[in-house]
Amino acid sequence: MRSSKSRRSSVETLEEQTKKLHKDMKKSTEADLAMSKAGVKISGDLLSNPLCEQDLAFLESMTALDTAMKRMDAFNQEKVNQVQKTVIDPLKKYSSVFPSLNMAVKRREQALQDYKRLQSKVEKYEEKEKTGPIMVKLHQAREELKPVREDFEAKNKQLLDEMPKFYNSRIDYFQPSFEALIRAQVVYFTEMHKIFTELTDQIDQGGLTDEQRKQENEAKLNELRALSIVADD
View (tube, rainbow, N blue to C red):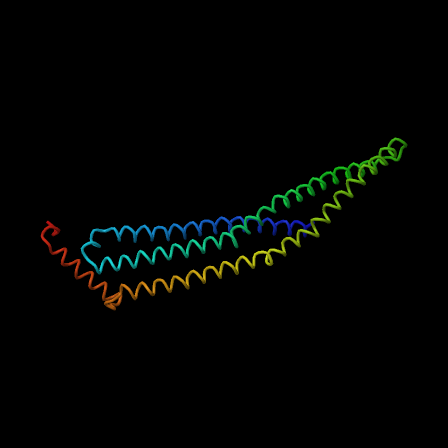
């Protein structure tokens, strides 16, 4: 009985983890899509900035950025579609099995309660004085108990045999999904590296380091602060 409870506890934990993983994967893909869509929106807004009409170099940089964001969004959509088919959908299908499994556990528990109730009835008559009427009732109780006991033993054996098989199959079931997830991420980030390397080559003509850019921006900001219209009173 302890072994049965232990297996049931493991399956319950598996069900909780599967549902949580399914929920987290959906949130992750939704966040991924929102990120790339936001990137496209930002680059589009920058491209429509009036400064693009006045500065050709700025226009070229923003055009390159907008192209990169759209490529990123396209690859991201492709990755999300792949993750949906190879990870999220299989997780959902796997989760759909648990209600039937839980129902089988409930039927076994109900059969156990029926078995205990009738077994207690038999034991009560066995303890009484063996008179004719008592012996008749004892025989009837034993006959009533027999099919109930067989039903419980059948349901119990089925769970003891099949629940470990179901639990142990989780690795074989999920491994292809997790491998597909890794492959999708590798392909995506490989493409992102290419896209942004090309973008950097297009817009980073000065070859400045991040620190040099920071100093340059600070110098320009100080020039703006020195203007009388933005000076502190």
